[in-house]
Image (cartoon, rainbow over all chains, first blue to last red):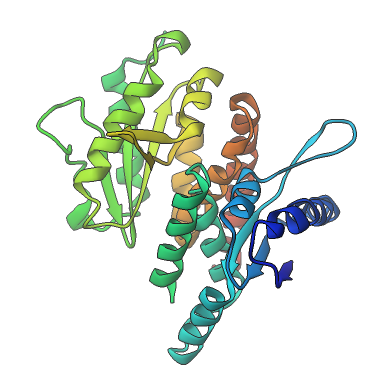
Length: 129
Length: 181
């Protein structure tokens, strides 16, 4: 799933933090029966650190307190554009396996705090570009 | 009777050798310091695995020590291999060690550093290597898939690890049988 916002200030977290996780959780549940993982890319002109903090925790709770793990990767439009442009220009793989590996790599560092996580994502994207 | 640590390390070595997964030049499980207790290191294309093996029972395992030792070993290789994963192998993974490892942070002068360590049983480890043997690209992917669920608590994470490794194992068997036609 791809979510895009034009907001970039702390309003970004207020306006997008909840809906992005809720939609991602809904899709995650929908696809669970098909045994498929769901990843969400959250794209903004600038990723606000508070939004990154909300997304890196990666949880959504159902009314019965069941915890759903949501996998959301926050990217800036520039990062996304450079990655796609670079890989297409050098005819590198941009198939599902590449994206899954890239997303999992980014998510495996979500135990860092939000500023460090954003830096790590940037580094991973640059390596992949 | 429980296997001793040296027996376990030997079993891990044998499984690694039998897997044939890693380039022979890098296959030697050289220790990363001149101590027999140091984590074993194994390099493959693009990533490296650092092993800690323990035969200790639940309450005797020191999660902090495992993280610290693997971190120090990883640090020596940070300029050589960018993707470094710790693999903690024990006969049984206690929820407390899983809880300690899932947090995956080591502080160096108050700077938090992510240390990604996957706690698995010897049986799961054998399956993980079979996954890599059947479908090489699935090995690192399976580790990453397991690490994705560290936001759950220790007992839940262990369940996810079991499910993910089983699923990948089946996936790799299917892929292997397809390739054999």
